[in-house]
Image (cartoon, rainbow, N blue to C red; front, side, top):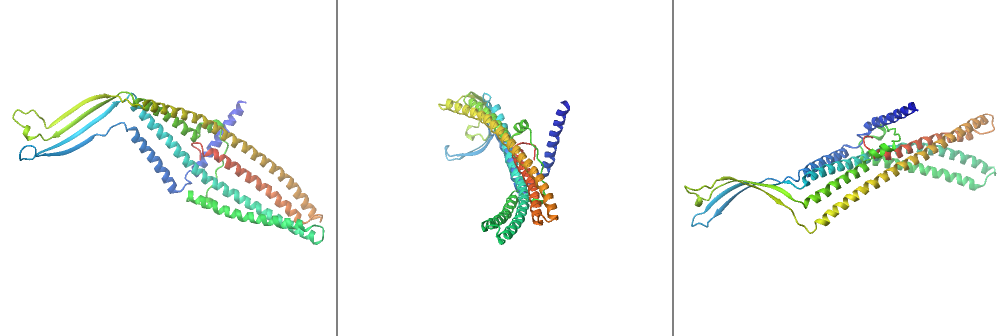
Length: 405
């Protein structure tokens, strides 16, 4: 039993290593411009957060002015003054501390959101690659179906010409071939559209990129690393700090004031006994507390936002769990489809061998053998298509977690 658990852990580790290797390969799938835009988003977020974390520091005011007065007789008195003024809160009942915490939570939440948006775009590009490969397989499948349609028309025409078959059967066979040929043309349009969408996201050639091989992520790991849940958790933390900031806004604030002045002394006040200084300081402190009729409503509103954000985290976790379960169930259905396709493959393989042997002795035609061979290949292609469908489903999980792809 112990060996079994060790083996399971090794398999999980191998799958994560595989995902990381392929993730490195497709990490730069986006075009240069798209990557630049995300880089600028990250830089802008860092700078805005840094600015917000220091927003409690008031600017120092530098002021220089000249005053001209003709009040005293016929002469004009000129006085120049240079001031440095500081009015800085140093205590806001915890508001400064929580403001810094708030800015850090806001930065982390925005970073997680930008990361998620980038991963979604990478996921869109990788999804297009999977769909291109899937469409190519579906085109091969349709070509085989058209070959069977042509054989079917030939056989029904022969039966119709000999009077063994009604014309409606021949009409249906011809209609089936036309429908399959139209579907093949529509797939060509689909390929063009997929390539055009890929070119918007990436400047690389789709055919030069190797697709990742994704494995099912453990449920607990998916929940722990889910980016949308991480964003909501950080938003909830942000709301908690914002509530405390709102409380502190209506509590006492202690501020220091200081002023340095270097100014000309009015010549009328200058004399042998004058004690006036050209350079001097004014300094002091103040304690203030606003009385605002809206303070209660403001505090209650911030509390409601905090409670709402906390509920959003719970709701998001439930959504994340449901997403995982839905993908898990869809993978189970796809595995059943693969099982049925393999079962059909064995049946068609047996029928092909029998039909081929009967054709050699003249009891069946070579066309009957061709139909069986084409049907056998179709079921093999179906298995590959279902495997790609599984990868597309798994991709929906991978783009929502960190450190993968």
